[in-house]
Length: 359
Image (tube, rainbow, N blue to C red):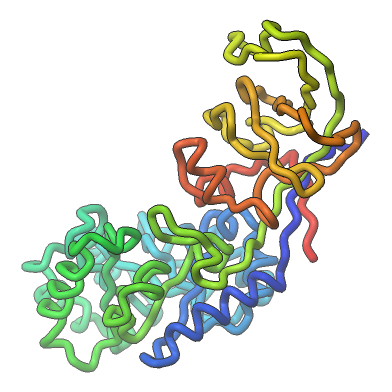
């Protein structure tokens, strides 16, 4: 028997969201790098890249992701956002014509000693994220070192990453933007990149030469408390399953592990074939909405590995009915909030036992 849990991926919605991103960058004429790391945010990296064929480039986290894209026929620039970790990686970078994010001294030294062919680099500057990147006082000397390497293609692109762009009430993004512009002012002709999804939608002055949208492409808001519909973004992944049983319980009966929910009346409870083994968040609380026949009903009790239970009082639910866990009709942001996480994690967490269907 085939498990009912499935993820439906709407490629038309993906292309629509790309056009939304493109429309926001028209005024600045910025080129658009679609971020498709982590298997296309859990949507399938090859299928996502093919649907986003009008993007000017793609950003990934690992060489294996980049190789998969090249071998599937992707010809646009592919940026390794974290660059490489060892000298032996350079052979693959050369063979597959990959761009590299450069964020530490060791990477520069490896290029100086080991690069045998031309390589395109993006110099990452730490303007306040305090994760990867060169400190402001290191940028000039590092840029000079890279320019002095014959095998480094010119011009060198300069980039940074925002820490708080998802919070439109924070002034930290403006501080980072100002710092980046001051640091890079003497490199007037160098291409520059700052904006992620949130920067693209809310911080117009950060668009520069390249924008790097990620989560918005998959139909989810990048903002704290935001909704995709606020920006005409369409959900790409809809996670579905079905009711496999309906049980009638009495007032006082407990449901599931740990007796975490007790029936407050005689009531029918539907059991749905989905759990954390499929990627549904275990920490989703009672009251998290589930969509059955267009009607929201509340999750009750603990999420288990293979099943969840929901209150179906005042519904006409029956065994075999389709259930939407998130996606079309039920925003992923809402489920993420109930589970104390973000939609990124929901998408990336869908497991291999879930069947994917591309439409």
